[in-house]
Length: 512
Image (cartoon, rainbow, N blue to C red; front, side, top):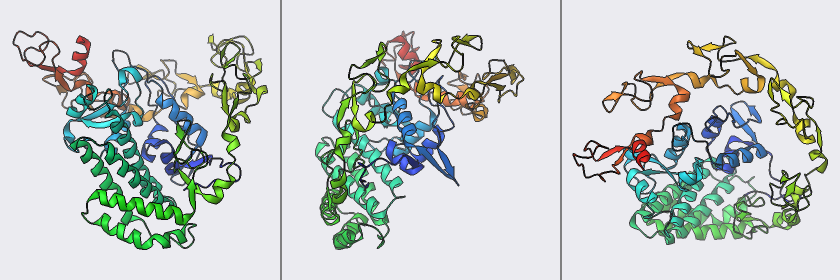
């Protein structure tokens, strides 16, 4: 349970990788991967590490949330592709989330694929929260709206994805205080009890049951609460009922009765610990579409901290830069994003002087740098003061290319990183990930050099290719689907599929 301080519960700015995982819903493993790999094609942005202590990574909250929001924006579509590629590590993330099988039917592990909750042709969003691991059958019926986007059951799929994400967060929260972990698991049990009410098909009931069973199995793993734990007395008061719940969790008891008991135990624990509904979100867990900053999405806080919460800080006020006009210098206001307002806590951080124009420090007002339009000011010759203050001129100095070591060539061809120049600006050199060029087995032909009786189109029949190319291979595009010309009738006169009735997805999409 998150504490609320006297200063309106200002969030902790430096988060370890487990706290970061809980905040953005991405595993510590994926967060580590995002610090070394740029997920979006053609964009070299990676997640920045604030510091490292021994083997533990720490992230700045502002950088983490900004990166998370950027990851939700539309992804670039590579040339000759119809959709943005899903990086292999993100596929692995949602695969593990679903236990390696279809999240709905818990089977067909060999035919599972990434399904977009918000259709990819509209959202182009490959953020893990928009992806669910489904078998090809359930992927198809979801895309056709049979239990998904256009029907009432859309709410079930969306909320079930949230429940899956909530479940994996519990594993990361095991790193925290024991009483907090207990509270969080009991809260999820209560949420899953409600989810049963929205499950209308046998498969949906089975999916919720599987997740509910996995959740209650966490209860016996909770260590005894220490006397130093701030909720020790509350824990002692519910110990008899918790022991009964633990026994039920270990047995094969009906899951609905176990969840009901968990809800009752949670109610007792909340009362004994002195928790009250969060004064900001009023027990909803969300505020302005995000996890409530006072209760961190937990819905309740300890009474003493609720009384100290300065809710005035969360009131919306006019943006101090654009005065509520939404525009600044003819463009969307950079402080409020064109909203015209913001929460008071954010408005108090805005320094209007930071947005006054000063001469660009890189091009000295000439509008050009390195024989091109100045990349710092965009050719304007000036920039806002806050950008000028943050500008690190050392990042624009030229250094040898780290891939070709200044030679201009790599693997007997023009170096892909420096374009054959042999050097680049330091800011680009620091982003070069040499591991991208490790040679790995082709994920399509598995090293056989052949795919469906022909030379493998991804590795050009070499069986191996650089890791950065392998990560872009979209195996989903090579899965066979019904021929759109003959509709799978296997007509010998069908020139599109040569009578096979099916064809690779990429070919079918081109026909459509």
